[in-house]
Image (cartoon, rainbow, N blue to C red):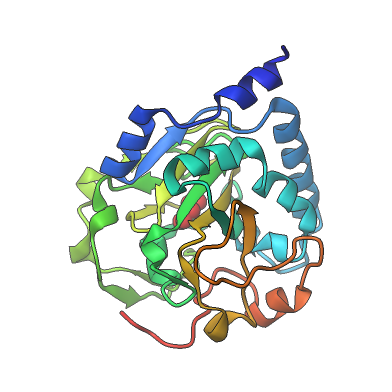
Length: 279
Ligand SMILES: O=C(O)CCC(=O)C(=O)O
């Protein structure tokens, strides 16, 4: 048996890891993809980065699978989906993806937030989405690794304020009095390690002022019993059935037939794509 085959067999969350996720809202996992598959993803990412149009920041490679169907090879990889299944169960949809690449020296910060706040109109309930944050580069405190505040995934309806800061990826952030930064934990991971976090968890990251690039590929999933609000956002977003069967009457995109109009309608960067504010 090769190393790759052994890894495939063992890529399931242990009961301890499932418990850690339930209690703290996140868990760290080792060696997600086979070594060959990880190297292929890294090569593919470097090509994308080199081809980035003039004026576009590497942090803004949001929903890259809308225009690059080869990414489904990794987004639907069994190494990823077996881990995701340990939290969401057997019926899984790909909700979104994003390369959060912070270049050395001036990589942007990600203000404290809960993902569910930004996704509140796209999926209901948004808190049930999860993200597998796969390290492409070493991610350390020096180059702006993700920080999480354990246990905050159960908090509801927190308040946000507007932000005008060119060094920030988002233009909204959690209000200071909603956060206890002293409780935050750095997620230090090496390439092909990942964290999985709940969409309710408070997290963020600092600027990358170091000399080492920091890139993570976020792969975001929902159980298919979460409702995708195609009526409101279907012109700007779509989801894909990754494993199992639909349980909410959702509409799914076809990975083999990309709809480039979605990315064009959405514009650059991670922006709120709903029609109305609810918090
Ligand atoms: O990569 C980062 O620094 C932030 C990532 C993030 O906010 C997320 O994965 O939801």
